[in-house]
Structure formats: C-alpha cells, structure tokens
View 1 (cartoon, rainbow, N blue to C red):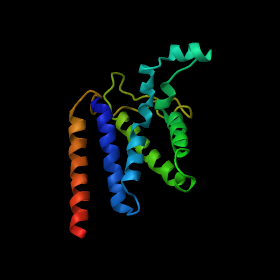
View 2 (cartoon, helix red, strand yellow):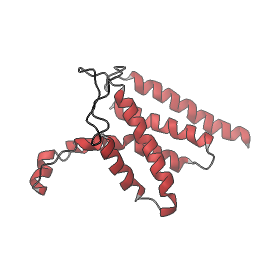
View 3 (cartoon, rainbow, N blue to C red):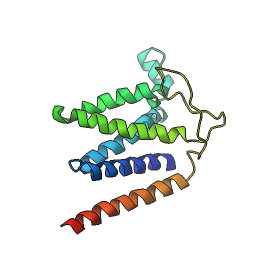
View 4 (cartoon, one colour):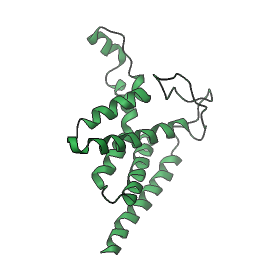
Length: 165
C-alpha cells in the first residue's frame, strides 16, 4: 500500500504546484490530478474480478493488464472526461493525464529483477524502458518523502493564502 499512497501524494503535490502557477485551479482540480495518479492502478480491480471470472461472463479472452499502459490510460482519461460538464472537459483531460503520467514515471523508477520496466507505451510499442531501479513498490521511504513534500506544499498553500489576506 505505500505505492498507492505515494501516487496520491505525488498527484496532490503536482496539482498543488500547478494551482500555485495557475490561480484558476482550485482543490477540485487538484483532486483530478490525484485521481489521474491513481488511474493506472485500476488494474487492481482484478483482485475483485479476476480475468477468468470476466472471461466466463463475457465469453471472450480478457485481461486487466492493458489498463496499466498508455492505451489504458487514454481510455481511463477519456472516460473520466465524460464525468465532467462539457465546458470543463479539456481541463479535466489535461489534469487527469498529468496525474496518470506521474504514475507511469514513478513506476518506471521501480526496482525490477529484469532491469526493465513494463511495456508503458503498449499498444503503440511493446518496448520496455530500462528501469531506474530506485525503490521497490513495498518500500516506505518514497511514501515518507512524498508525504513530507505534500505536507510542505499544503502548509505553503494554507499559510501563504492566510498571509495574503
């Protein structure tokens, strides 16, 4: 679970930094970045509905794995955009995509036995980028570092806004 927490905290940090730069972005937009940062891990729905279960219902070969790739990210971002009003869709797509990109960037840094990451760019390419081998998904230190960053940004937002008033 430190992996999910790290993705959410990094999404919060990126969204907050963007809200500093672009004043029209509020907490709702920061939440979109956070949701985007979690979106590739929708693949974990396989814990509730294994691929074999879905195959039995649908009657076709099925896999959840593509949700954790570029193709799955495009699909989730597109579906996420449909959940907001038409005038906010362009902004929602951009913010969810930024969050999802941060997720993939963090996952490329994972330590792997093979020394290469997953096929991030599938279905365009099955090439596996070299892994940066910085940490395991079970390591706690990335969550601690991202938590400290998020806390600092939260304080800067909260007390910076108070100082302006």
